[in-house]
Length: 441
Image (cartoon, rainbow, N blue to C red):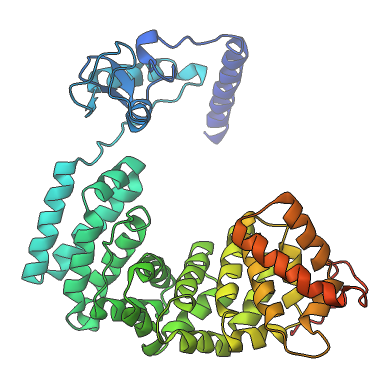
């Protein structure tokens, strides 16, 4: 029995290979009415515009997003920019794909209908109603539905952002934050994960900014759930830049908040969370808040300066820029500079980053060097001498020749004047040579 089955299977495979070899040189021609007039490719999601012409949804949406209001084929002004799914053409294309499957053509999947503005507004109404009733499960299910729609396609996400979904979710988060955290943890977690998806695309001030909301976000930030920590810091990244000074100071007052941000850098869970944490810290250390000095002192005591310098040795571009931005903010204080003076990697890393990463990294590197060198009080020159040894003088000269913004040029010029005092008595070494630099580990 098994032997017979194997023979039949072998015969089928042999027949399939023979058919493939016979058809190997045959080209399948796609019918013209199955091609998108814009991309000239087989349509995967055919939609018809008010002009009566059918296009692939992705192509016509890009055309409209570019600011066009006319039909690409007829050049007539479109009465409405809303595309209508053409199910008839889509089914014909699917049937054609199945009929030509032997030529290696795969059947296009049936696309899901994108969310409309009316559907989004209906969900908004239901969320607000659930909040007024205190319906945790109902609101949780609606938030999960929004998250699923946002992840389904970029078009859905754009529609949800345009209709103000983030603002409605922020309202719901604030409402459920008023009650016990333990009672509402599930619905708050779902809303937070949804906000983490939408707020990155919604630049309006739609974040949950009440004291109770910030407190709940920090509780998620301190939790053991990695997903909750990631969502919390992504929301904080959008929230902190628009907060009042008093509310930024809340992060200093809430127990464990700053430690949780530091932990995301020291023990990364993902690149997005690490970068978001650096952005939150940057806004905190550069805030003109009365508690700014205390915030910087707290991060310095946690060991952030040493951690940033170790990270900068081999960090990728985006991470490097953010780490330098934070270090620049910290070096604006006496305690931050003192910590940087005492670290062996400070000058070698900063000098190396002047020309090796990006214009933004160069700007922050020069700014940090400026703060350190201009505030150097040791008689032996300290960081000034080390900067010359690491070829900082030559790199700053090249910087002025290549060009940079006026503020950076001004700092570079002042640095050259200060460094020139010690230049004649100092031997230079290669700035990329870290062999003789003692690391604190």
